[in-house]
Length: 102
Image (cartoon, rainbow, N blue to C red; front, side):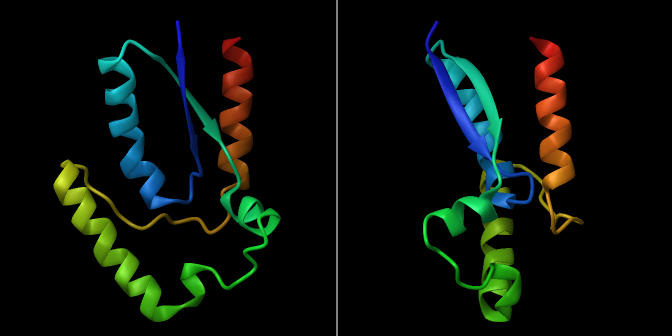
């Protein structure tokens, strides 16, 4: 069976919004769904994106919050800002659970 790999970061509200849609797409096309946790901040740095985060830019942060609510409403998914600023523990726990499944 072919696999749809879905790369996400626990801290990203847009990953949260896309997760359910990605699962629906995978199912509709007969694909196995494989979520893979990533560290978005580390990937941005590796790609040379060393600018400030959205949280460090008040105007961008306010717009992002509005945009998240807009997409959440469109998808019928309630959304609120994450209470964590560092997803490392969630990523480690996710990897541990996935390792136990194998």
